[in-house]
Image 1 (cartoon, rainbow, N blue to C red):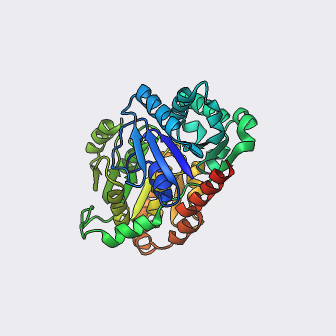
Image 2 (cartoon, one colour):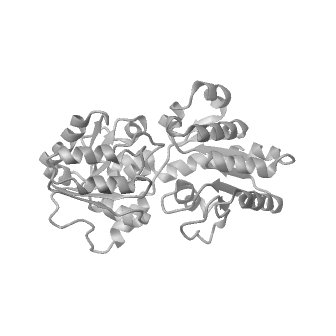
Image 3 (tube, rainbow, N blue to C red):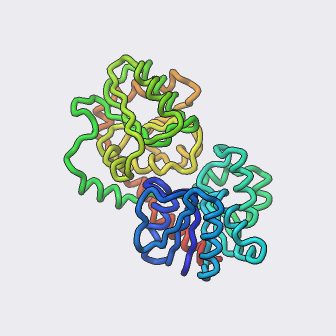
Length: 356
């Protein structure tokens, strides 16, 4: 089988590359074309191209790839690259959309209006539409369900637990937290309004928590968040480490006691699945994607992000129960593997590819 995969970016956290392309590199002949320059080296078993941020250049690349290859499946991972593909094959090869699988990697309500419009158009044209989870599928508006409901399927995102095992076995004896930290907290994600890190910082300022909080990720809100954190004068050390490699992020998770996400919206949060498998207790906003992935155990707390006292109480709970939290690291591991394995996800997509 020959597959052309189209996405916006290739980096250490992008699902289309890390979960999809790497997972299928041994069984499917893949070409990966992204709009923006690759932030990491593409595996040599995958043919990689990029538009260097130029839509025109990407159109030219797609035209050339289509003319030189008879792809069995074209898998599109964003509305923008779907529209670029549509332009590239217009008007003589629009029949290629009969080979298109489109994956929605977010909940519909999180998308900006522009992206909703682009996704709507591409989903209408695609042969098959997949969502990254049940909550993502359930977020689709009624009008869209009317048009694409019969060809839409939820295939739950999976994470690569073998990678976490490998990092754990190979990691150097280097602590990413201060050795005397009473509580070690990690927060992974882009620093933006949707991820809502400001709600956590405001609660940390009012809590009795003692320890260290490390933010992994970068974004438009970084300066505002760091300035706010500098004015927090309690027994907390708050560090912003910026964007790090996936393996380094996993090392932080393995050493942390707690992983926190107060996001206002998600697709299906891989970073939280990874932190659960790594042994972290989780504090999560009570949005459907978080509830979809969380085990029925005492290893998580859900909070209403508009209720600041509730967030503060969750942090104080961590302080009061830290020894219990530290001793229960293995409790959510089996749940994560059983329901959110990357292998389960890839089996679902292979079935979809074979149906095209």
